[in-house]
Image 1 (cartoon, rainbow, N blue to C red):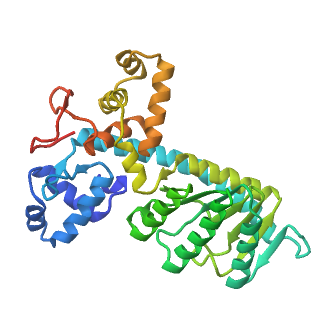
Image 2 (cartoon, rainbow, N blue to C red):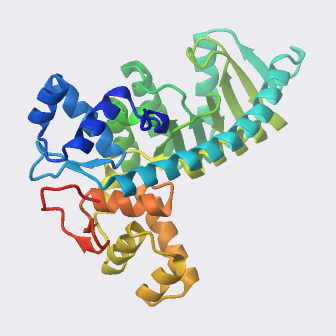
Image 3 (cartoon, rainbow, N blue to C red):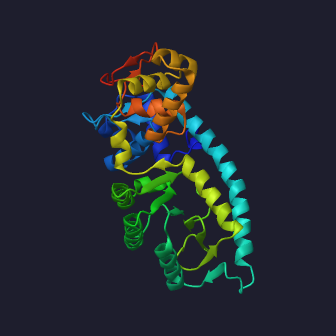
Length: 345
């Protein structure tokens, strides 16, 4: 179960192992091999495609292409290692933030900067109050993979009103949100108005921060409207904001615009992506592009951000498996097209 240790769903692992033994199977053939309905196979392949382990060519969606395992799995492993390191940092930061929030929660009731909100109406009223006074930014971490239609509509009304006033809106959801069509559409609409939505693999406690001064922290993240604590102008808000900023830096943009923008590469950027996919060093990349090492690193960082990649190598693999640059040849590592019906990578 080596792939399961890399965070794959059992269906993803079964489909991937089957493709490793016969990379030329169509979706129908793979379904027959596994004894699954084609819909189940298609769902597993879609998730594998999102992880850059297989490619689903637009001109032949029924015949998946296996990305060369040594490239794809190496990128996935690097991704897992980076996520583990980041998770450890967040745990430490979360511990500090949670300790301060608990201290605030247990504080004397006459403290004006800490207010317990005992029910949904009290929670919503305080959110509306903070939102109405918000002038600069709202920053929120949402721990649930999907949200009810009512919650999404309420969030969109709130966000739209604040964006119309020139307030920046930043929200982070779990990576599982990418499979929730309603939330993706919400992210698209928010982006069109100037807001930003990202996803992260691991999220600390849920929190909504207004103007870097006020915060709403649910008592039970599974029922964020049920009961919460409102905090203003305390060290706890600063700690929570620091935690949000760390998560935001590592989070991946959500919405179809993120993929659309990535398709508009310059010749220099395409060359850079090919070099990243081949695992070249900063020095080799700079020499091939005819720029300084420092400039090469800046270009690489920019592309990683546009693609939502967590590592240099993953940026190249993502671009190659999505057909934006040629895939490296299986024998000598030189770029080739994706037209060949064989294992690619």
